[in-house]
Every structure is written in structure tokens, then in C-alpha cells.
View 1 (cartoon, rainbow, N blue to C red):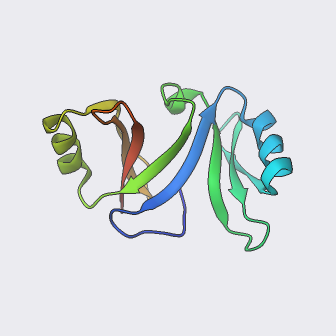
View 2: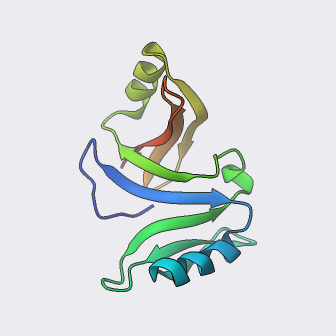
View 3: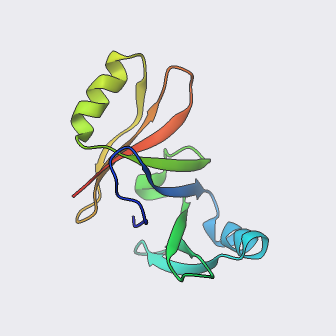
Length: 128
């Protein structure tokens, strides 16, 4: 996960997890002009989508496989939090629920996916 904004409370990244990322990366390349960059997942690739004007990654398109199997198929925003465990506790305390349990992303940090009391879904991300 990379992104341009690392400020607590900001949206640090967006991605889309679907059954066939290879096909959809072409759709977004044509529709919005993004280029794609392979991200090896072992026996398949996910994709960073690259801004044509800056050459920076701006979004991800991922396959609904492996650790991503239970991620909802929607554009997912990753909101940066200071303390993920505390945010998870407050989420459930204030009527939300955890959709995907905390996952470690190695050198990047860790994240989970929550659903708020209005049923909207987002990811919470704590950077290292």
C-alpha cells in the first residue's frame, strides 16, 4: 500500500477487490487513463494503478483471492488511524462491526475493514 497522504484521519489509499483484476485494469486504463504496474502475489498479480501525469501509484485493483477473498467488491478507502486496536474497540463500542479482522501488511502497517452503523464499509489503516 502506498499513497500520497499519510496524515492521521486522511484517506491514504483506495483500492478495488474483484474476481478479475486483469480485465478491470484495462477498463480503468481506457476510461481514466491510468497505467498499471504489476504487484506480484505469488502465482498471480494485483495491480497498482499509476497516474499518467505524475507516474505515482494512485489506486489498486486487486483479485478476490487468498487474503483478499472476503473483501467487499467496492472502491475501498483506507483511513489512516493512530492506533488500530483502539479504533477497532471504538468501532464496536459505537455500533459498528469488524467485517475483516486485523491483517498485518509487513513493512507497511496493518489494517482491518469495518462497517459503520449506517452499513457503510471502509478500511482502517495504521502505518508503521
